Every structure is written in C-alpha cells, then in structure tokens.
Image 1 (cartoon, helix red, strand yellow):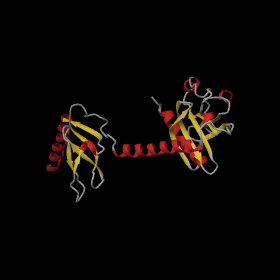
Image 2 (cartoon, rainbow, N blue to C red; image 1 turned 120 degrees about the vertical axis):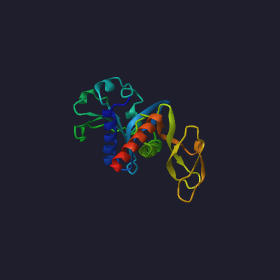
Image 3 (cartoon, helix red, strand yellow; image 1 turned 45 degrees about the vertical axis):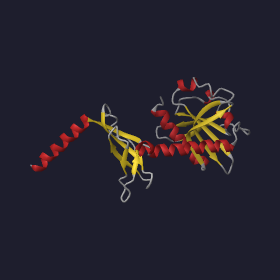
Image 4 (cartoon, rainbow, N blue to C red; image 1 turned 90 degrees about the vertical axis):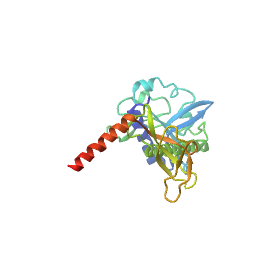
Length: 236
C-alpha cells in the first residue's frame, strides 16, 4: 500500500515537473518497455523542446534498495531524456544514485532542490509521441477520478453499509444528461429524473450508477431520533 509520504512526494514531483516542463505532466503513467510494464510516478513533457522527464519517488531507503528497475537495462533512464529520483531530504547520498539518474530532495516545506543533475539520454527507448499519449491518458484518468471522487465521497465512511435498506446513488439521465444523487432501495431498477421539466424514467443499471453511501435500519433509527430531538427543542 502506498504511504502518505510517497503519495505526497509524487504530487510534489508533478508540481516540480510542471514548473520545468510547462506542457504536459501527470502522475502514475503506465509505460511498456521491452514487454515489461512499468508505472512512472511522475512524467513531464515539453513539446516545444521535444523533451521528456521521469521522476521515481523513494520515500524510504528500503524502497530504494529493493527497486530492481532503477538498476536494470530497461529502467526509467532508458525511457526518457532525463530521469530523477525524488526523496525526502537526506535520505540518499549522491554516490548511491544509479548512473544517469538525477537526485531531487524535498525538504519539510516541500521545496525541491537538485542535488545531482541527470545525464541526458539522447536516444530514449520510448518515442516522444508514445510518452505524450501515455501521459495524456494518465492526466485525463486522474482528472475524471478526482471529479467522480469529489462528487461521490461517502461522508459516512461506510459506517451504515451492513444490511442496507437504501443506497445513495449518482445516476446520469439519458435525456437531460444531468448527473444527480438519488436515494434508492436495493432492489429498485428504475428512477424518475428529478431535473426540472424532465421526469425521464432512468434505468439504474444503464445510468452509470456510482454508490456514494448505503444506509441501514440503524441509520434510519438514529436519524429519526435526531429529528424527534430537534422537534422537542423547537417546541420548548
């Protein structure tokens, strides 16, 4: 499982690349080199200069030492014009860095400095067009996932999902195309669009359903109790 430090450094790596590469940057870019699948932590493309850079994040020494990709013939240094290793400050020395790679360090305030400059690879194994396509795909997927997660976050953290009596789903209407939340029963198959002036019957299975939360009888009892308590206070 990815640690919080690794996730944070990966994001900082994308921001750093954006300041250097300007055109296209993304995290978690899937690459294929010599039929081997790799996932680059961060990739940046400068289209005008026809230049690519890859960052591999290492949050711990253990992670660095067990990574065979960095030492192999088909590592990130072979795929792009420049490749870096990004670590917390003081984690690695310049002498430990594999040949060709640069070393970036992030301090406690996320300021990144170049400790060791990378050596340019004038003939990357991956064509720039391939990297552009892969990076663009990763950036698009990240945006769509972020938007869907923002709209569909379960604020209950799944506390009431056992033996649910109702679900909160996000559905897309086939007529007005608006995506809205709906409370449905588990066995329900159809819903009426709630958009003003629409009222189209929505077939749940075909409406890109995304379950935001589930509610069981305990939740309904707690909700009813809260409503009754509020009513008592209002009467007083």
